[in-house]
Length: 152
Image 1 (cartoon, helix red, strand yellow):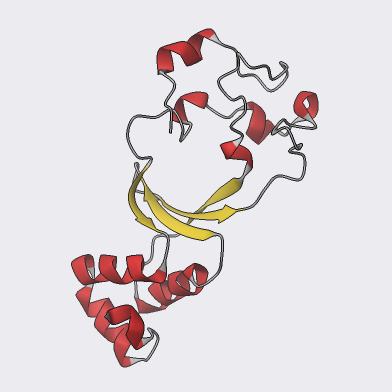
Image 2: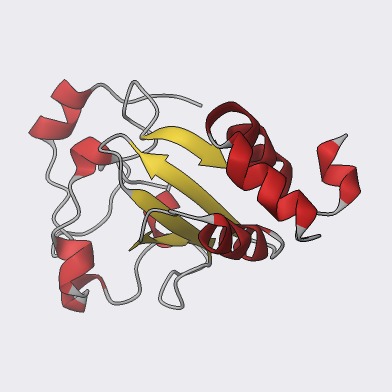
């Protein structure tokens, strides 16, 4: 994936009230219009981690710990206002969340991952528990809350 230098981003306006042209660093990406991320409470016990497994059993779901230590739930979902050309159909009337999006934090342009830990599958979460929370993992196994195939 091509990365755009941040210096170039500062020169080009990415305000949603401007038109999206080929000179705009957002063109034709629209990655930020293809998912939502919501902060969730950091898991503290087996019940909390069991809920994370439940999330990860669903398609289009990821859980991650961001670069500030916050736990996030990411849902892959396409914005209903995104056109076939990957342009915003309500560009001039976009919600505040879109207007205030900081392009310097764009996944396409940052040089380092925006996450410390990424859980794209239940197996990723098992691996994390094996490294950081063995006691909780054992409790989940004892309570039959993790299928045996995830432990292989």
